[in-house]
Length: 212
Image (cartoon, rainbow, N blue to C red):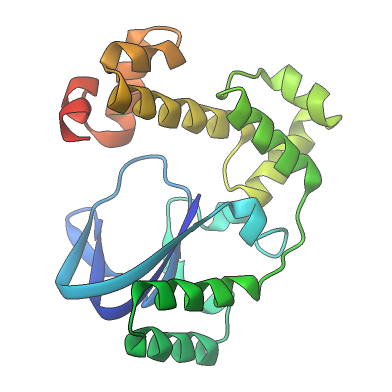
C-alpha cells in the first residue's frame, strides 16, 4: 500500500539516517522494504489513507519513483487544492468529516490501470506470495521482462519482491495471532523467516512478537 498523509495540525518528521526531515503537509510514502521511524513535533493532527499503487497511480507516474521515499502530493494535485483541503481539515469538527474530505480528494483521481498487474497482484495476495516467476508469466501471458516493467510502473517493485512482501505481512499476522512458530509457516524454514524479519524491522521474531 501507498500511505497518504494529510497534516492539519503540528508537524511530522521522518528519520533519515542520523538526521530528521520534515514531511510535507500533504505527502505520499511509497512502498518500503524496511521499517521507518517517524516522530510528532508537538500535538499533531493527521489523516492517513492507504491506497494500492495500481489503483491510485495507474500509468500516470511510475510507482518506482516513490519506492523508499516520502514526497509532497503537489506532483499529483494542484497546490491550491491541497491548501483548500488543509483549511477544510483544520476547520472540520469530527474525524468522520475529515475522512470524508480526504475521500473526496482521492475520488478526483481516476488513473489508467493495467488489468494484468491488478490481476497478478490479486493472485499473489490470494496465494500468499507462493507463485514462481514462470507461473506469473503463464497467468498473464506476458514475458518476464514485460511483467517486470509493468510491476515497476504500477506497483513500484518487482513481482518477486511483491511476493516476498506478501509473505512477510502474512507472517507478521500469524506471529501476532498465534506465535513465532506459526509465522515460519510462510517461509521455507524458520531461519528464512528470522532473516527476513530482522532485515525489514531490525528485530528478531521474538522481539517483534513482544511489541505487537
